[in-house]
Image 1 (tube, rainbow, N blue to C red):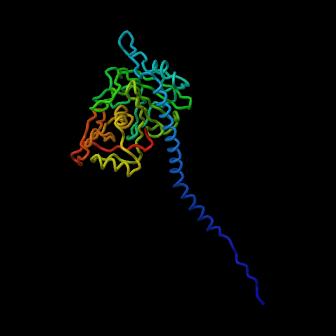
Image 2 (cartoon, rainbow, N blue to C red):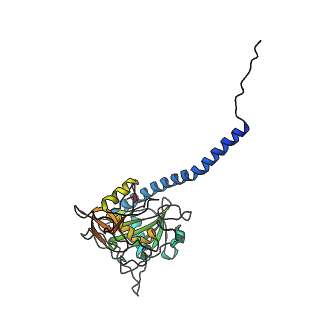
Image 3 (cartoon, helix red, strand yellow):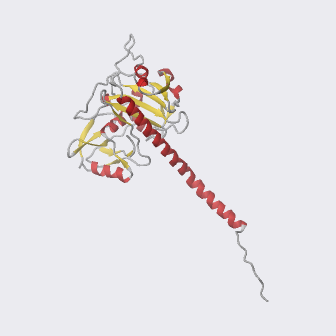
Length: 314
């Protein structure tokens, strides 16, 4: 006589608890990075859209030159706000406007974190506030008040107009910050964290008054700057899924040096991807001049470093 023995199928309580513990640990490790990755992709898409909208809007204006509005003492009397109301608002949908005294009322936190620094800085209110104070290249002999507005898409955007912008073309010596007609600083989610440049905060700079070139460089995260010759620098960025900035993008980084580097500028210039001729490429001294540097210079001879940008930057 044979007994029909049935094999028990299932897990013990100990096995279930161990499995759940392992799943919990894996989730705790991977979930934050997953959420961050999703948020980064969403911000990247929003930044690209914002850049496209500004490029289209500014191209519709006959000129980016604003002139200089002054009071009886020769002080700025709302150049940025007047340009916003009288020019930009005719080609770009503006939801609400905040004057110089109430810039943060448009959805900015009073203090923000630069892209490559852990310190906090005051949110800019004047044209010169986006530059490191020690910059030799001030961009303008006049300092203008900023203004701000909310876009129809919900972004908070501050505007700083360069009153002496009158250049229409590139020069052989490169791009100077005096060619930056308009500088925008935006926040994609208002006062919500992290309030950091490169994440929810960024800048868009428009060069040349009659034929604007609009750029919005975003520095690649977690990729350190590296001093090397041009060819190695370009390869270094490419190997990290990034790229070197163009000539205008590097100039925009200088115009916004405080937002990028904090209160201390790097001692080396930064390479650009723009060639001067067959053997030389432009490099931008942060807070200083742009110059052409031999692309074959080796470390120790070269005075330029690679600051890599994300590939879908503009």
